[in-house]
Length: 59
Image (tube, rainbow, N blue to C red; front, top):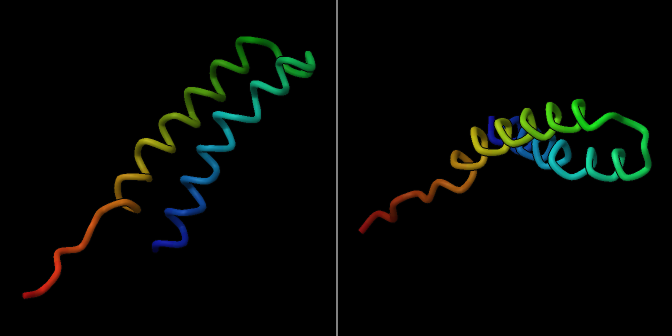
């Protein structure tokens, strides 16, 4: 389960970084860039809180 969350978070992070380079090189349109960034943002913000959740230490 945790490895699946890592994969989803990494995919979301890639979707927020890579489209910027593609627009810069004029390989995709700005509208597609916005859509990919939005999907990447959703994937990142939905998955990363579960990965960063701290466990309580037993006393």
